[in-house]
Amino acid sequence: MSYSNLSKMNFEISDEQKNFLDEVDRACRAIREHETRCYLEEKPNDMIVPEFGKIGMLGCPISKKYGGLGYDLLTYAFALERIGREGNSLRTFFSVHVSIGQMVLQNWADEEQKRRYLPSTTSGKSIMAFALTEPDAGSDPGSMTTKFEERSDGFVLNGKKHWVGNGTMAQVLTTYARGSDGRISAFIVDTSSKGFHAEEMKNKIGLLSIKNAEIRFENCLVPKENLLGTKGKGLSIAYSTLIDGRLSVAAGAIGVMKDCLEESIVHSQKRQQHGTVLAKKQLIQEHLSSMILNIESSRWLVYRSVAARQKLQDYVEGLREKDQHWQEKLNREDNEYSTLRSRADRLAAIAKLHATNAAFDCANRAVQIFGSFGYQKTNRVARHFLDSRAIIIYEGANEVLKLKIASLELGDKYQAY
Ligand SMILES: Cc1cc2nc3c(=O)[nH]c(=O)nc-3n(C[C@H](O)[C@H](O)[C@H](O)COP(=O)(O)OP(=O)(O)OC[C@H]3O[C@@H](n4cnc5c(N)ncnc54)[C@H](O)[C@@H]3O)c2cc1C
Image 1 (tube, rainbow, N blue to C red):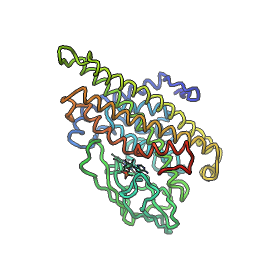
Image 2: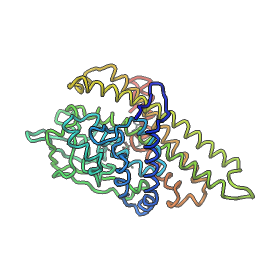
Image 3: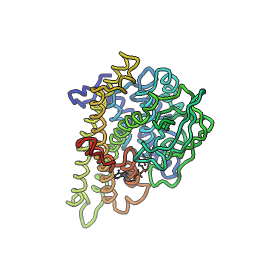
Image 4: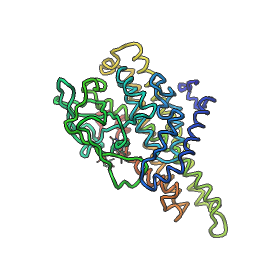
């Protein structure tokens, strides 16, 4: 496939990309009714893996070497935008499995780890999750209390994580724990390991067709070879992962907004009140134009930010090919890397902050246009409304992102979080 010319900000797609995105649309349509049923019955959607597995979406941006499609990040973002139309619930599955699941391994694992874990995740035989948040460490993961003890046979983990997406169904996840020297390291954990426990978190108000888990590590032994990246650099791995997570949420939010707009247009052109269809009322048109503004402004923030993330990825891949000690090099001061990462981090925070607020606003307006018809979970816009509340909280709560954006401008000494 032709590689998007990101340096020139060319977002046009090739025929091959178009064919892939058409397949994504087809898979979305194939699971649509089932997704609604699963959502209403609060059951995980068991058609996601077979339907999206058939078209390779379970490893869209993962290298062909490990069974993925090897697509660039912009193509992946376009695919998430399509998936987002079916709801944040479905899109969250992909964000977790791919963006903060597989991509952590693609970016930070050694060759042996990639060969061991990635092929079964791109084929859908195993599902991935990301376990960072703890009951007492949410916006501030640096205060985590999950601990690891290093022994001759591996690392023994003890502690608790919560809200882990895909956590009840994942076979493999990455997690983060503090060593005796106080530094945090990252680990790959097989969920079949002794001492690993996952329990479904109940009573969510949205995202009802995916499950979140509370996870306990009770003397859970992780083999030596499952340390991810450099010991003590776990928090840096987690924060770099959140760049990908935020982009996936923001890309999906565009799809949510498009669906809200389309549903609202169809309804407002049909529904008559006070002698004319709602679409002729100026206040309804104000809702529609605000939605369009939300979509267009989010699009360019997301695409621009994906371009910055791709540049970072290309730089790291180049380094990885040239130098087997690339991780040590990044850990020492590498100015080019720091500049590219900081730019990608900043733009992803801006895109996520804007697109998620915009999606919630669109969903809210769409519910209003539908009136009482929009107040039932059987209605797509009602589900978008419930689900879009979550995206303002996860992958960096929006208040914290505001502080991050401001302090990146002001400098570290002004950091307010
Ligand atoms: C549906 C869902 C799915 C999730 N999936 C995952 C997952 O897969 N893996 C995972 O590890 N975690 C996951 N999470 C956890 C999520 O990342 C955290 O909920 C999020 O980081 C916020 O942490 P918290 O809930 O502890 O809130 P807190 O950190 O307690 O924040 C509460 C409020 O205070 C604000 N706040 C916090 N600090 C500051 C500050 N310094 N200044 C101003 N305001 C501040 C926040 O913005 C927020 O509004 C998920 C959460 C949800 C709801």
